Amino acid sequence: MEDLVLKTLTKYPMITAFVVVGILMWVASIISKKGTNGRLHASAIAIVFGLILAYIGGKYTGGKKGIADVELFTGFALMGGGMFRDFAIVATAFGVRLEELKRAGLPGVVALVVSIALSTVIGAATAYAFGYTDPADMATIGGGAVTFIVGPVTGAALGVSSEVIALSIAAGVVKSIAVMILTPFVAKIAGLDNPSSAAVYGGLMGSTSGVAAGLAATDPKLVPYGALTATFYTGLGCLAVPSVGYLLLNALFG
Image 1: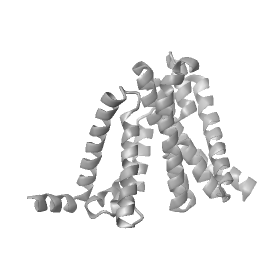
Image 2: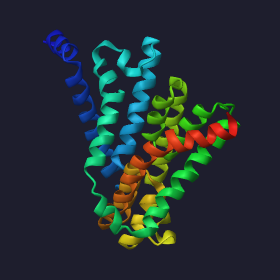
Image 3: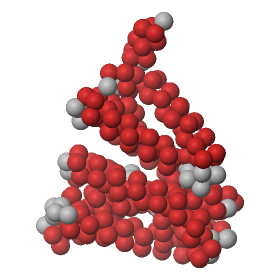
Image 4: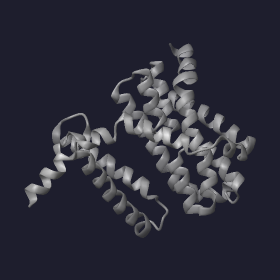
């Protein structure tokens, strides 16, 4: 029976990958609700699980694809690849209407532009300080500081190494988790008690998962407003960082 189950799971790796992710999300949601009282969102816990599994998979096989190097979990190579990433970005963009962005008002738009520019500058400056002086590498890590989606999109567009793309993802994950955890604690100071401030906050922080989770722990009614501008943040970052951001960095450091 055990051999039959293993053969079936190995034969259909994509289904296996979805099942494993579903189980991880289920466990993460239980830990979030009962272990942290909702303060730490399930997606943050699931991300940590994923990073641990990737590390274990890489050490176990000596390969370069993390858990996907284990025969039973080869489906993760496709599930975590560029195709699904780009699909998620496009699906997010199609789920938002321009008319809704206008309702966030001028402050929300200004917050989007300023925050993307500031995050890119901080990320690029950090990359330069650690020896990554190539403009493409700086733009990729700067994109990671925007979100963990913008980083790999920028890296793929500019043809940087997988090491740099991994660093950009790490930067975005750290930012997302930090926003999830800190939002409830700074909510009072930041005035997060109305839809307008939540929309501006979403534009400033940018991480959709981080903002949504943080506002959910603060006041669930504010989540749609913060997530609205945060969703556009990722899309705008994917357009601006590989183009305008890279061209400016190349002009300065190329």
